[in-house]
Length: 196
Image (cartoon, rainbow, N blue to C red; front, top):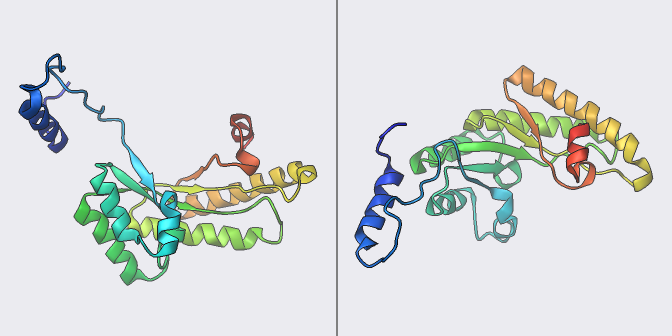
């Protein structure tokens, strides 16, 4: 066990110390989040705010900082560009200035609906990985998608497995691990996830 003094511990201690006189029965030692437990927020959760122009990636960073989160997850759909290095440098610097590391980069890929769309979706994943690596993201979160119809679920599953394998190969080439987001469609249940 370490007695390292952190900003959070100091702030938590000063708040508790300052208000302890008025709190009868308050715990002597406030609950502190374990060091291995990190909280981040995904920009896609603010999609309506981004789409309406009420939020951009920088105000999203400010929101995450105000919530005292440990990092942020950027969905590439909320970036103005994934290839403009000048803009990406501003994003990276914005994270650094706020003390907000990028927990992951996320891309919405759809491998299940159409075999013809898979090459375009793989390219979308590659571009997201390159942007994520430039920003310092340690991992890509991706989606597998949905079947075009319930009777084509098994066909879509096989297509999704192959596309995820190719996505992972691109990630291995670039040096970025790939994770599968459990989110509806072909990954609606824990059992679905285990199949992949």
